[in-house]
Length: 338
Image (cartoon, rainbow, N blue to C red):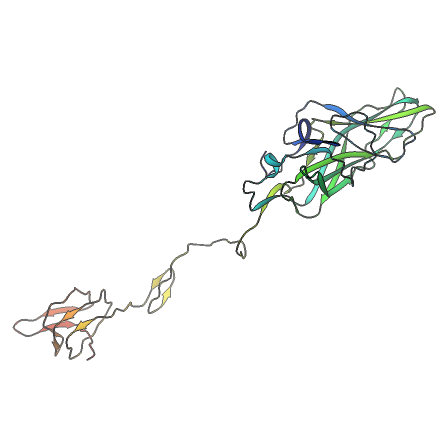
């Protein structure tokens, strides 16, 4: 399963995530096994009103008094560190649970033995919580919890009651803000109940058994819309707005004149001409100089060049070439300052 996921997560017992003394954490998987594992049960007698029980995966007859909502019992189902919680860029990124109200759905039932009841119904309080859990240090931080008080109810009237029938419990857990998991932490789900007021039998001592069914599609963690396990990464630098480029970037060149529209230059680029010798008279340039022209010799009168031009320069106008020493006349002509 990838790190960034909004997939429904199912508690399954086939894979162990963390184990040790007093620790039993199995897998939260994106695919349920469908094996209907009913091995996790808790018990209480009719005299134990309001006691707490937290389910231990694949363990029957749990009688602990841990509050599944507020106590880290280290029993439950979790994502794996390497496969599910570590970003590809582990140097700059951590896993994150985004805000929203998720739902923990449970498939559960209750039953009783040892006592005689005439008629009535019983409603325990189901609980669930999410934790940031460090399997190396065996420590955890509570993210949020919720209860399913009021539903469902089982009728224990002999012959007509529905004890032993699996019913769905929906527990809402509100995550008010984004939760960042530190290096080495994983998401842990704990599930349990409070016995509330257990009905007293008319005869004998009654033992009540509470069963949580896993590896089943009805027991799962379902995210809110736009909620998921994602990655949060640090960035160097600054960003303003949405960083959306509208159009095509271009290089702006300095020009002489006016630029309008899409890089349309309505001016003239000018070039300097390097000349060697003496210039007298007047020359006028109309249009654009296409290159720097180097000249050798003496120019006198109306732009008389006594040497060859080093380059041909585009001009605007008419060039008339005279003979017999009449000179070379360029119209329009260059303006040369002496």
